[in-house]
Length: 89
Image (cartoon, rainbow, N blue to C red; front, top):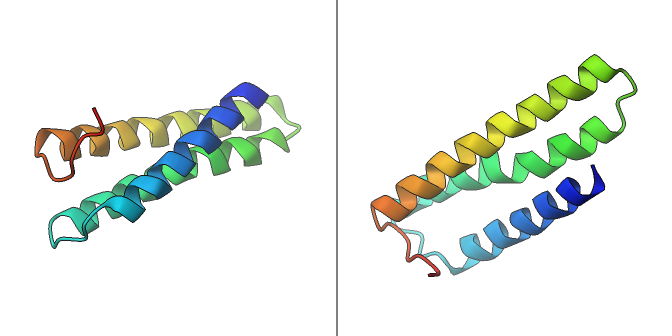
């Protein structure tokens, strides 16, 4: 679990850096806000799961984190496809 938590934290840091460098246009601001909302929650939910002792609750929290990751992917794809922000590629 530690590896995934570290990766989620690094991803969250990347999202914060992306937010800082993104021009807040009327179109970009709400989209990036959604990206941050879901992207930052991935790691926080995994951290919360680490303290749960019940196996079923732990699995449920991990599934919620996976859902948040999928939502994050959607927002990343949308931002890239619409060229709302410049891709770092």
